[in-house]
Image 1: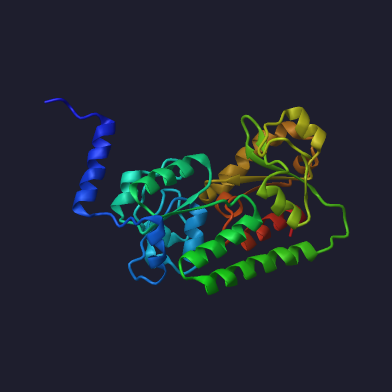
Image 2 (image 1 turned 180 degrees about the vertical axis):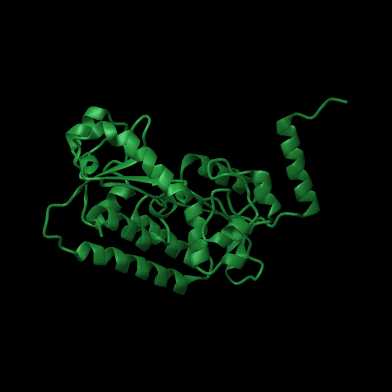
Length: 294
């Protein structure tokens, strides 16, 4: 007997799922039924999408998340269906979803297309700016019969954003260098939502206009930028003290930079500040404390 290859084995698994009726995928035109059905089963393929769904009161309807979905804490109790970058389609289908929610970047867009070909209802959202975050929250509210909750969430977040914008500091805006990677050094440019958040609380991007979203920069560019504040998000918030010590050692070579000279290097929780989601108000608070030493 000829052995079954890996790709063939995957199709066999999908065929078995179909025969046994183990998945609940519906065609896109049938998705409206989930608005009032108690059998709504949602798979979320991004941490910020998971946070939004929880914030809309859909905890019980969520049947699958990625390994990176760690907030709120109860999200860790949900069945995992692969990673943010590489969702496991078989694991997704095994949860019998009535809706799979994805982001719009290429890897997840391809996953959504494959799921739609199989017959799953999917909802792909672009969340690269604050305005897109608000629109995505409202879109989920409409799709999942949570209009009132969605509108209240957007109102809360936009009010926080508006309050920060209305503040009028009496001093020049501090120059902020937002470092996403040390080796090689890579920073958030002016075309990112990070830049939008820094600007909202009264700071200015130290690196100036950039062609790329997260450009690599040289040591000479750091010295020329003369940032007043350096902010680094970390994906290990449980070890902030260790991360701070490592950062101090790394930036010791930049003693002529005001942020280093004045001890204004901040290591912050990346899960809070680097996700566009329902904790936007908390992210703005974190960033403002760094920018203004509050």
